[in-house]
Image (cartoon, rainbow, N blue to C red; front, side, top):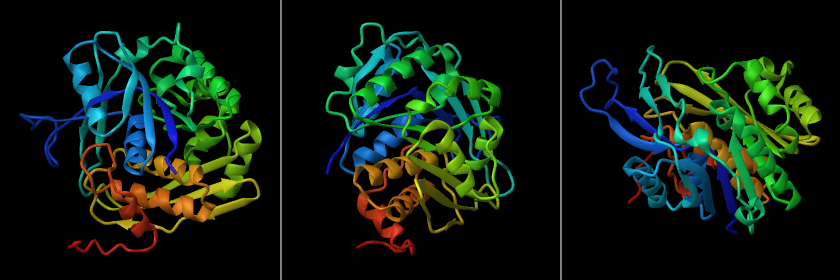
Length: 330
């Protein structure tokens, strides 16, 4: 059954050299429009849901191009404000073999950092919504957005709408202490939380020998109903394995592990996993079904250039069920 998901976060321009070239070599750059929340939204639309983006982009051609890109993939942009002078951007250098991928941010004083909800009725924005989602990168780029998110999450909770947050910690955007301080007031308003074990330890001081202990501690501190903990093993920039752990109350589930021996583009893979989590929980699936679907969606994202996953529901379900041959479909 189709659900309405409202997403709040920054919209960005991504620039990267073609193939595996380094930035110092490039004489042309590929263009993608992105944002952690928009990435999740694109997958959710692909799976039959409605996704509405709340953000801010400049009122010039670059803002137009970004908004049009989202519309191309079915994302509702009616709540994207037009203000500011520049679209936040980042550069990506795709790694290979033992050479790591690299990201360079250029997001200071972007249009999104000027976002204001003055005069905005969050109850109107959230009317008919089933889910509200944001990531930690929003307060990371602008601490002034913490009160905005507090009002949004409070309105969602008052309306009985589930709230999810992917911590999505980026060391180049803020320190663990800054993240802990900004997220402390927001997380008690969150129902479903996504966070890796290393970030839980560095930011919240939560540690344990097993993911079960870490998830239970996070839930006990902030009141989460569900905690998703992604797991990734990087054998090289080109070869990873991924899986995840999903906790709920006294239950938990561990996904199957997917081997990814040839990565095309891993950026956005975490957002695809979060989209899978939202889809599964919104549909009322079991924990094993949900976590396997989310990890399968993430796995398939590694095969798609750009930040949007764009795998169909049938493709994700087939991989989650164990069909991983990659044979041509005729």
